Image (cartoon, rainbow, N blue to C red):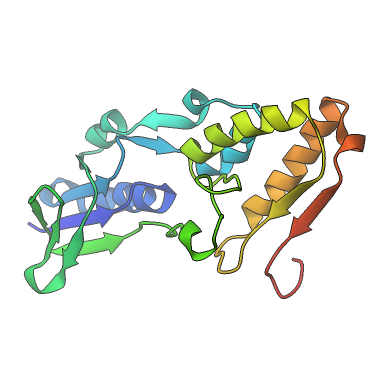
Length: 195
């Protein structure tokens, strides 16, 4: 009997967990380590930013679907992977042993790389549901006093699709509110060419 541990319960981690468990069956254990006890459908975060969806529309509790498929859910943050000991250390001192490890943690958000970047700085983000909800409050305030807006991705970004989607969604929402003519939009990307 082998134990497979998956770090991260985003789209990649969940698909890995379900497919590995389905392939290996009940003879082997599969566990997933997640910082939260819920899954968020990240592609819908721009919709939350403009009020088209709410948190409850794009998140689900992980416990029930994982249990149903025989996958153990471990809620907590992995502190360190120790390959020579085949374990993941948790901040509380727990050690999660594994025979095989899948790392599906997604991108690391590095807002601190650029001064003022990110939800704690002077920009909004759709990278996480918490950011999108905070961004919604800022978007509502912006719509009460419209003006120029800048949308885009920063240097070092690994995924540009959400920036384009967010720009188009904001464009649509501004038109619905009949204030698009009051909002000059600028799109910024570090890509070498658009597309």
